Length: 132
Image 1 (cartoon, rainbow, N blue to C red):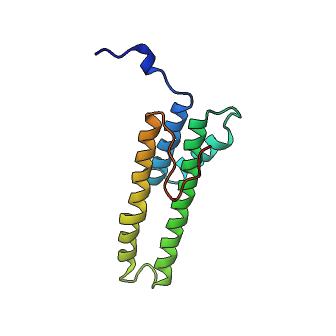
Image 2: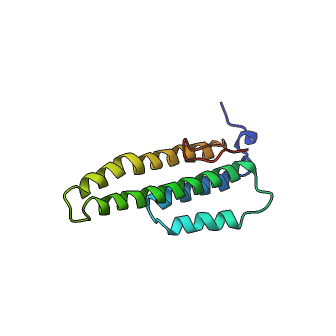
Image 3: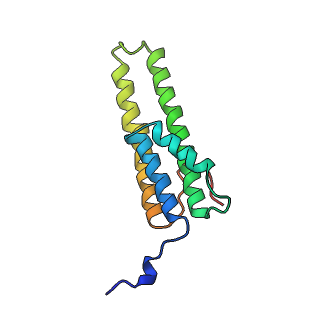
């Protein structure tokens, strides 16, 4: 069955929502810090009449990025408090952090990207801010 031209129309704010989720994943995986700065720039330079879909994804990704940074600080504090980076248990903490916290945040970001590409709102469980 052929796809009609009407079904290919973009939902208002969908491309910006996809960009927000892409920057979030880039912050976690490729260019940490730089992608977060771009995400903040996108948020503070947003138009006042931004579609709710885009605003929802933008707020979610900023909130989740801040949580990701806080979890990274907590993991480093645990390493330092439990003997420093030369201690034997350092790798245990690093592996636990990456297999639980980091991979969960990445998985939630991929789910958010899929929702943005589908034109749907998404709220990160436990970390996200409610969308209006």
